[in-house]
Image 1 (cartoon, rainbow, N blue to C red):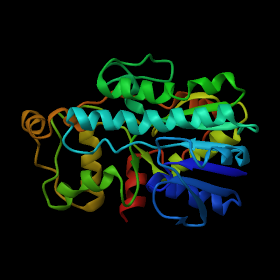
Image 2 (image 1 turned 90 degrees about the vertical axis):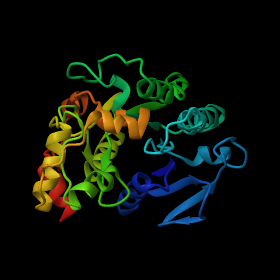
Image 3 (image 1 turned 180 degrees about the vertical axis):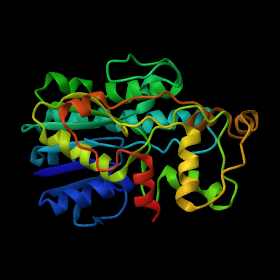
Image 4 (image 1 turned 90 degrees about the horizontal axis):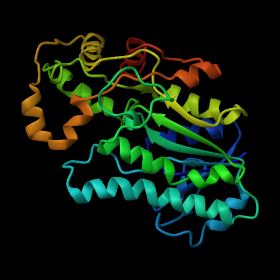
Length: 297
């Protein structure tokens, strides 16, 4: 297959590209950067217009939209929050527009989204749970809606509501493990809040599984099947690294330092990958201890 990835130069796109190429597929990456990206063909774009690349859509079997400025950008000013939205919404609208105007449309479109769609508090959520009204939830809603028009064009649209993806480098795991490596490991705030995660191999595996499954369409939670609290996450890192777990980080202090961004680690709703499990996906790393031992060995 010919597969186009928008946002393919980050660690998620790099992992996807490597896996697709190993399977014999041809990968194209929409990028503002390098002209050659690990056995994939780079297609230049400015992420603001369809000029110069829109005709390439006719060659594609699958289009994957994983663009978006990292939420770990600090501080969350009004301009920064607008950039979170623009970096997700505008590329999605452009891709949908290019597909609508194409003579030969791709059969599959993968739309990235976030597990925070369901909000930061509440009972165990699954794909049937309605969206919340906080900033992160509404960011996910608008991200998804940017490509909603494709549902009426005969394109099988798959929405991946992803938890933070754990990888050896370039992921949230680097930030979370640093205090523990420095012997200052402990819970953030109460430690009871949900800490969603998924191993990079399962994230790639789930995306590929859904693309291959002809019945897969709509929203799927890409999250580990075992619910994990912040305290459990940090404590497991400490065990894997053979470091102490003793230094709690007060909630008021972290909220004062990080501002609104603190919701990423001090708040969280437990969610489950109900539809992914029902579809038959088999996790390679269903438990946190297995995942961390693999990534931190």
